[in-house]
Image (tube, rainbow, N blue to C red; front, side):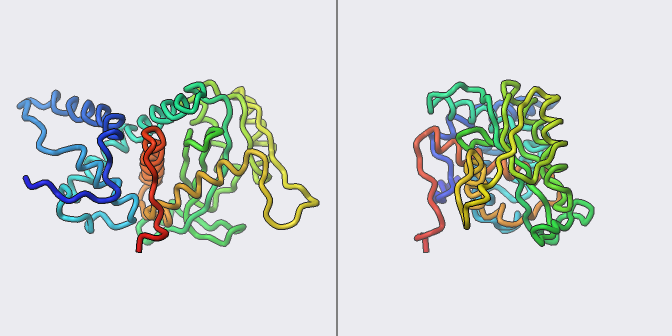
Length: 279
């Protein structure tokens, strides 16, 4: 097989050393269950490169370049990794490594929660969409929790018609399950007493960060800017500029994939090129 020319989204050897063992172990476990013991014919690194390309550029599955594995093969692996929780697992593992590199404990003690409503394409079923009356957006709502560095701790995707309070209330459940050390969280004024009370049942002290009534225009809010920056990081990945996924679980997987891309670069000291100046 002729070696192809690299794309800017391709994973480096240093980053593959972090991610590759999990994916190859998953593939080997599948092979071990085969009655024939037939060896793998698909290079999982190339599959992962194809997923990074799709996530970064926002193209449709059938438009993947032909020098990647067939799009049907790439989607097969993507769906299997999504359903087996591999993307979420990698996110947790890389977040611990990134925190350790910054001199912090591997497990976070605090989180910042926020939501983002995005428009959907024609793909998602109507029952998974809704209208966000406050933002005048028909689509889905992403609820995320990050640590103090802006690294993803939890993500839930639902219809945009779900209130910020109700959408966000599921996030601490996931965050606490993955990171039991969390005892504090900050949220904006869209989150009400129900969220605060629910967080308390999980052993999490929730603080609602309010705007300074005397300030005019934009101003930085305590802790809140961290999660807003994370949303900005996600939007550099064009697949996330609109929700194209049929299943909300696929939307969550694409968010995990974007953060895996970002956090692995953070660990290895590689830069993330922006679209500005590329054309």
